Amino acid sequence: MIASGLSRLISVLSVLVATASFGQSSNWPPTVRLLRTPEGGLQPQVVADEKGAWHLAYLKGDPAACDVFYAVRQPGQTDFGSSIRVNSISGSAVALGTIRGVQLALGRNGYVHVAWNGSTKGKQHGEGASMYYTHSNEARNGFEPERNLMKASTALDGGGSVAADDKGNVFVVWHGRPTGGSEGEANRVVLVARSTDDGKTFTAERQVSPKGRGACGCCGLKAFLDGKGRLGVLYRAATGGTERDATLLISGDNGDSFKDLSIGPWRASTCPMSSMSLVQGAGDIWEAAWETGTKIQVGQVKLATISCDVVEPEGTGKRKHPVALSQGTTRLIAWVEDSAWGKGGSLVWELTDVKSGRKSTGRGPGVPAWSRISAVADNQGGFTIIY
Image (cartoon, rainbow, N blue to C red; front, side):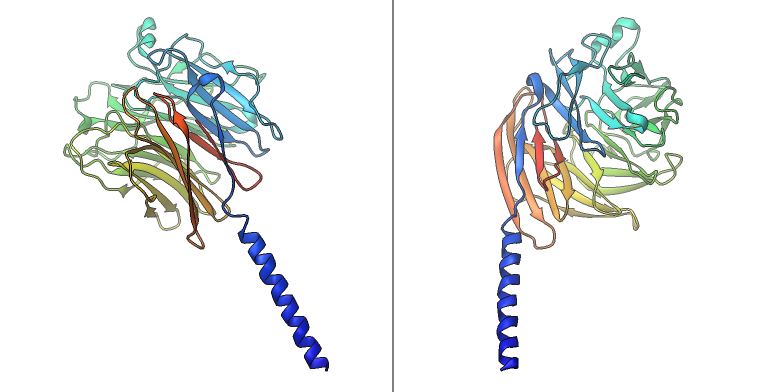
């Protein structure tokens, strides 16, 4: 009798466990929320801080000569607060091409670091195209006047980037030619200017890409600095006129030296005007996303072995401007589909449970011309895509 009762108890417990497991799995997929960029802005870039606030930078105005704006969504709020203009030179940013927009990073003591490619209005004070940088002021209620960090280089074209950490390090990264260098994309190089005092001063830019590798002229790059002092730069190389591999530069010593890793081989004779994504993944992994032809590829970069596992979202269509990030065991990949010069596209995303392999896809309303998307993980286990 005792054995029989124990057996029935075990059976009941098994049913309860199975029911609980089913209930947990029914919460998948996580919610994906869609949020328009405030004020009809373009090319949003969002970063969450450790307290859960979302920091947003975006462009607004004439796409050929627009302005940079910044806003914050505090924890528990559903909308961003009032925006403030970042650039002091009116019209000094450019949205045309969808590649040369604003980039944002969070640093020590609440500093917000912003960088962008200058418009032709930069020439109003004796410069060619400028790699502009600024950071929030001491009161954190505005921004210092922007500075052009190009001191020993020229021929800025594809979009630059900025990365920062909680130790005062700031890196602004772009590609161009050293002053006096030969023309041609094979002679373009990835350049880094570094600050160790929260962006107050910077070293002169120096080349960090391998000699002879080149850089695809109209493609953007993405910089990322993790909590262990490792700097990553994801860019499109240009070698021999046809080798346009997505290439990752990795520094383990705060930008003093770099290793390079080809993670997305591609052969093409023309520049695709592509953008990149690079963020922290789970543990000792970075999540990278890039374009290869009309496809999107996503890589999990394993820092311990300097290797990369690559996957592609399912489906067809001309895909551009990817972002990828993970929360728990779920990876979000989002992109813009069927966009072109001066033409918007569709917002598409794919969720994957990396343990079970389950997938879920979705589409949203159109992405405006000259714009792309950004995404952030929320504290409910879901994701928000801003476009």
